[in-house]
Length: 271
Length: 286
Image (tube, rainbow over all chains, first blue to last red; front, side, top):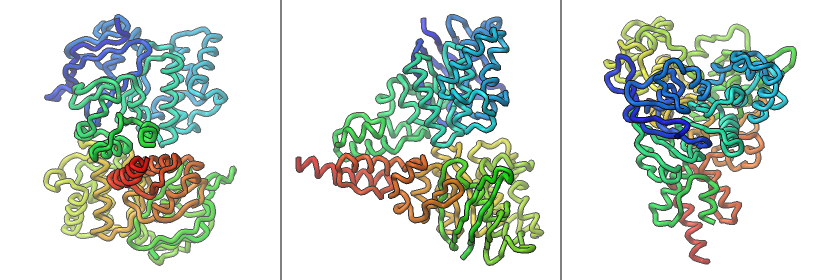
């Protein structure tokens, strides 16, 4: 059984004529790094809200660690299993001091204080914020704030982390920090990641990509395969990285090069 | 000379003496398109807020359209009509019940007659690509984020500024939204002769639009020149942890591998041609 399973999920917002999500099938195994990519309005944030039961599907089933999200009595069990990180770093920080912020969730579920200390230190270490324990949260950079939000989630030891456009409001440096942190947590610590983004560069480090458009999953597979369809991706309003455009341009002019996702890949293929 | 800054220093925190701007000297001419880049906290936003006298410097002098804004009782109305500023996330500042009223807010404060206000609202909405009849009576709050942003920009354009400053106008927009914005800025610059000052983290935007690029770091201007000149300082930009435009990065990396390739190219098409030319020829020789 997968860690997380969506079967024929449909969801419509009240008062809307068209469903926001249609016929969604998706499964995530332990240790997976899954990216969900789509333009504004494609339904990807709605999907995130369904995963930790901020919303429930109208049709179909969502099963997290063997619990169906329809099961109202176990809603907190599911939320404990699915940790969420959102777009705006300022909306997720509750404490004025870094370590208090990470400890907030643990205190709420009455973890003994020695264990809180351990888990907070460990979580801060994993996101590269060791040494910032007593720093004021409002003085952190955007990237640091998002890493702090991630630490707060890791400390709760969820089965998976869902990140909904975690870099959309960050500068390039902050984006890099957050993406490197996510990649490290998955590759080195085997933490299951579901990354929702509209940046193809970010999605290209995942094991598997789902492409969403108009509420449906239109394409899925390993990034190198999915991102081959540059014209299609552009047509659904996604950001195609310049390196893929260049590779595509070279191919169309008869140059033989393999599937390219990164600048390193392109440079290696050419020289 | 439209805007001139002489030895401008601005200290934010009087206790800690943090210099947001550190002895800036800068001249901006009519009809330039200036791109400003720099790390978060480098002073970009403080700098542009000096241009329309939203902040006054701790020391130094600023002249806008001949008016010394750091002097005694400057004509700030004239300065702020000359220099329009579009803030970050300007859609957060929409407040009227209809799009018409929101765009008309500035012109009405200029004591213009009704017909003139209406004319300006029409022109401004038309410029940002929102059909006047379709949109004028709608609430600005029922629009998409990209449309809201265009309404906010229309509100500034309705003031008929000669200089338009935009602080990260494409942040959070999707690719189509960004393309539309780029077209708008090009049109304002070329067809309406508006001087444009653009702050952006997106190097592609900066290289494709600007005639001059200013790089800021710790309150100082560290590079100032054409896109080609500025982005030839690869090491310096990297030290400031600024990204190179992706295409420039690719070309530099090929050069490091020994390809004799140009690095002053900023469009995909030209880069493809250059790579085929150079790499294709090398492979032929081998």
